[in-house]
Length: 232
Image (cartoon, rainbow, N blue to C red; front, side):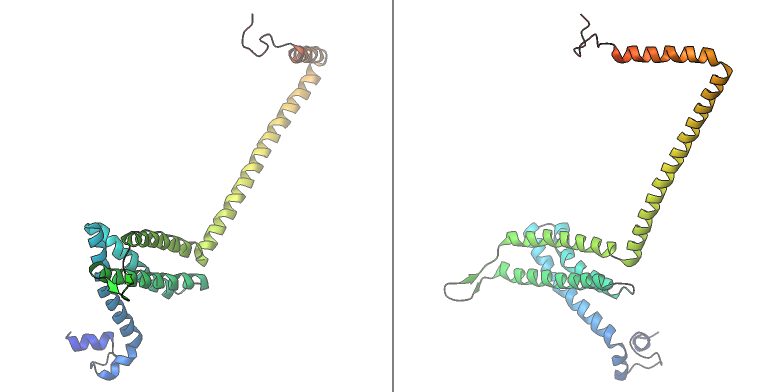
């Protein structure tokens, strides 16, 4: 497959020929690819800012991630075919956050090397602490937005709701099983006691009186330690 055939299959109408008339058929795809590539080039400025501030490759990549991930994830999240209105709003917010952070770092990259003189008495300067604050705040915002996007998804929300109902049902079922087991045990004990009364009526009453007397003595007996633990 040569380059013309490939372009015809991807961007054209797959008729074996790629002409200028084929381009409008994939206008949305072309615009999306161009925008994403342009944004990717803009991320070089973000990388420069992060590397200048931290002098560390991994930390600089963190700056890039804060601006690029929201932009690309927001697009994917918006195109999700079962996204509800809230999820689409979060997706748009993620894209806007990515653009805003990228623009802020792009402008900061220029200010790191230059000071813009607005007037003779006013200069535009840069507070480097704000760059770290944006990186940390953007990371937290992205995580929270992602978690919220997941939790408000209709399918996941229904699954969570179903699991909670099932959990409550299991608790109620366990409670009923426990009550049934205890009632069965109590009934067995009561029947055994009734059988003892019938089998040993006189002896049972005498023994029961001794139990009651012992229980009464135990209830009325004064604590010999007086609560101090000392019997003397």
